[in-house]
Length: 199
Length: 199
Image 1 (cartoon, rainbow over the protein chains, first blue to last red):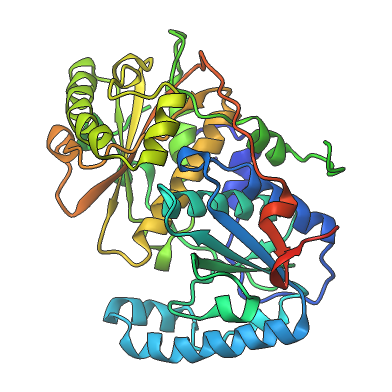
Image 2 (image 1 turned 30 degrees about the vertical axis):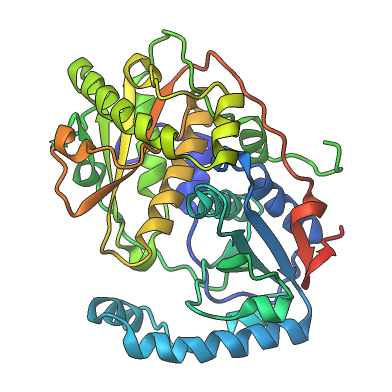
């Protein structure tokens, strides 16, 4: 690697992972989904309360209902998005249409969390991060889709004490958007902000 | 494994990872810290805004100042903690004293995030999750320490537009608290809440 670090197995996964919004029609094994859930299950959480709940969706009608509800809130979201975010979404070709919700073959994982648990938000996002890396380990791709205000509890019969964090469509990648990153010296410092961390 | 899943490299890391609050005095290599930061650097973020900033702390005086400030807010936090959380902390032996902040040999990573970026909180916690797994890949241990209200910006000269998410003390584990997890059937469902995900 250009910065002289030797790679471990994990850094390979981390570096090659991409968010995927278009999927091939290739089948996805149930065992792979189970291992992805397993990675989330073992993640750490505030006071070990494990506030996450995962709903795996492979039913066609349920996926369609999720898409309809998400596209409903997306129209509102795009209308009210801050200028900078709107420009980024336009450049990425992101619109209120979310075909990947219906066409991901065949799995969505809808991730909910119990809002009243301590550190519930950090905990659920750590669990999502662990699952994203297991997706990569399986040779699959996923998006982190966060439909603000979508009422998926009703569709998936999830009690109101749980809130949706994200929907992860999972399949074989048909696109690869490489995103640039800041260099380490731009965001990692030593003992005080602005002093670059040096090897 | 008891559920019949075969292990990949990542699931091994996920399953063996523990939060560590006591460290041995063994040295930690700078290269390991660099690879841990690297795992965070490549994590995904809302609109790829990379809102995280990492401050690696190995200066003795800075670590001591961080400990003093964190213990100041911990006294307040313990006084006001909800009963259930207070009981859990007591059972775990967690008190307002945080020796690991000063005694972690020698590195703390203080993780900040730019609050105004889209999806800043999810993004920074995904980045912390990626770093936690790289800590495990390095054969090291870390705690996820979240001192509510601690003013570390002043100590580390971090601009106010950034907020502290967590402090990660990193070293060789001297304790191992195994935490039980729900079974998959208790928190992973299929198409509707309550219907267990079946292999």
